Image (cartoon, rainbow, N blue to C red; front, side, top):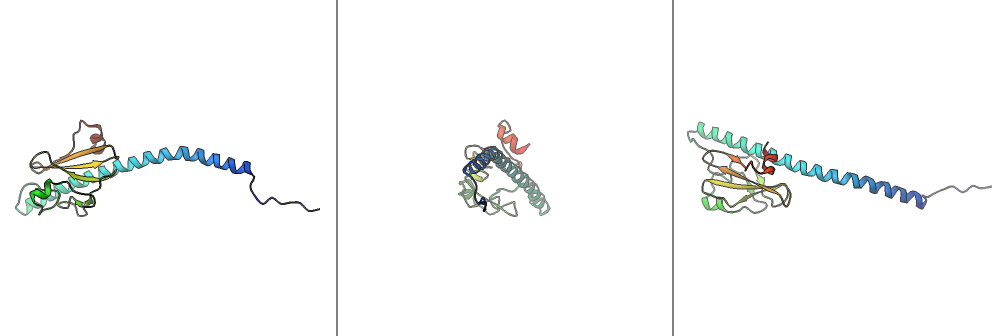
Length: 160
């Protein structure tokens, strides 16, 4: 007498596995989305700290070389006034004047952009947290401040 050996999964077993995978995916996907937002905020905090540190380092170098004051522009040391006031397009380098490795401008979540400045002596940069949320940072070349409006909750999240 020969016994038949089982060589495949039954339909019930396949359905059970698909249901379990669906449940695991429904739990894991929201956690991954939250982790991505946390990573974007951490990237922004790191960028802001590097920019602020570079502004101070640049000032110290300028004082040692006999040129007191802060960097006139964070775009580049040789940028013209017309270049500084224009919005920078995606893919162009930002913070060339102070960072060893400039940041590429991106108009999407996790990206920086140079936007139109509100007044003379101020350069405005925008960081996009998500595609719908962003925070504007102003660089004042008189005081050397690179900061945002702390009354905005997203600003607090990126700087504190």
